[in-house]
Structures are given as structure tokens and as C-alpha cells.
Image (cartoon, rainbow, N blue to C red; front, side, top):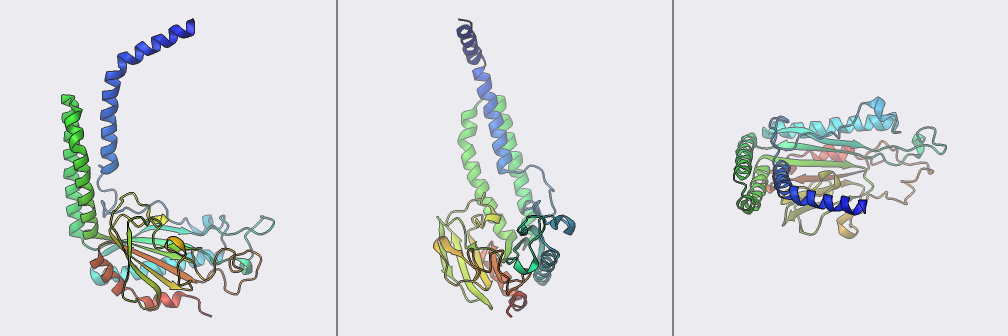
Length: 330
């Protein structure tokens, strides 16, 4: 009996606060959605609203050794970081662009059989490493993008305040989807006009043209010196939430995919490519003495995402002779 009365009282309380609670939740939701689509804090990094550098930078060498990687692999990461940074900086200087590291990751290493220390150098599979960059191709477009986004954010915040004052959610919500569409179109336009994203994968277990293929159209492109595969891809439908580090190249309509080094030339399903070493191969186990040291570059995959005009300029400026010299060929 007491339980029944308690439930009845709770029901009356719910009915009493429901109108206010729903209204409050709507405004909180609208504000949250606005912040999702537009970052209101400007000056987060020098080239905002272009992607700011992620937190995925490699720590110092002493931290890496506990992973367990070995000194030769850490030296490899440092060497490759410097090589690709120099390559990108040279292109940026030549084209009067700007560039910075977006993200960087390294392989986690291998323990020995008793798990008391790193696996011996002679048994270690190829060490993997990844680095990506943002290339600013037009700083005036970045400034225009920032100014437009600030105006857009101010407008949307004004609309929320008006809706709060009037209590009229219907009018506001009817125009919200339209404004989201405007934001998407303008963001794509400004991004293409102002930046490229460039990613290098070194010695991966496998790689993909893109892990999202529903709206992808693949076309061939003119051969790039020393590349085994050169593919141009077009996304009919972009997705601003595509995760770059997972090879989800959907934020722009266009990107290029290149392979250098020792790869199996034909892809498996879903446009996945494997290097000549691959899972299950003796080059990837932890018991066979390796004929190629783990700290040598065997295979390189490269993605460049952005406007086709700037992609072409970037590819033409890339020193592929130097990239080829990175690859172990003994």
C-alpha cells in the first residue's frame, strides 16, 4: 500500500514538472547541437578552423622504451619524422604554403617469450609508424572561413536566445536543419579552398583506399614515379565525422591513394592492400630470424585529401626519388 501511494505521488510530480522540463531540455539540446556543429572558441591553434594538431604525438624516447619498443625502432621513428617533415616543409616553402604535423603514432613493440623484456632485435617484425600533416594552401581562405564561422555562430546563438524569449520552438526548429545544411556546404567549400590533409603509413599490416566505400568512385590517375599503385577517388557524399586515422577519407569529395615499396599489387575485398609481408607470414611472426631488420622501411602508403587542383600540385612537388631511397631493397 505504501509503495502504491509513493508511485502515485511520483506520477503527479512528473506531470507537474513535465512542461518546464521538456522546454528546458529542448533549449539545452539546441545549445549542445550548436556547439557540436560549431566550435565557439576561436584561436585554438594558429590555423583554426583547419584541424588543430591532435593529442596523438609520440612521447619522448624514454616513455617509448616501456612499450616495449627498442632503440633501433625509436631511432627509425625519429628519422622518419624528420624525413617527412622536411619533405612537407620543402613543398610548403616552394608553394608559399604552410604545414604542421596533425597526428603521429608508432608501433607498440613485442615482448620476448617470458614477457620480461623486449623481443630480441633479430626476431622482430617490421616496425610500423604513421604520421599525418595539415597543409595550408591559402591563408586568406582560412581567414575568410574563420570570419564566416564566427558570424554563423553569432547568428545561431541569437536564434536560440530569440526562441528562449518567445518560447516558440517550432519556428526555430524548422530553420535549424536548413542552417545545418548551409554549415556543411560552406565548411566543405572553405576546407577545399584552404587545406590538404596528408597521411603516410610506414610498414602497416595492411591499408585501405578507404574503409568507407558506400559512396566512393575509383578512377585511375597518371603514374606517379616509383609508386606501385596510384588511385584517385571521389566521394559522392561527404561525412564531416569521418575519422582520418581509421582511413575514413570522407570529409572531402576527393583524395589520392599511393603505394610505394613492397606491396601485393592486387587488393583484396573492400580495396584493402597487403604488403608482401602479411599476417601469417614468417616476416610477421616472432620466432623466425628476419632477413630484413625491423627498423627498415619496407612499404609506404600515402593519402592526400582535398581539392583536386591542390592535390595535383602537391603530388607533382613530392620528391618521390627520395621516398624510394627510404625503402630497403637489399
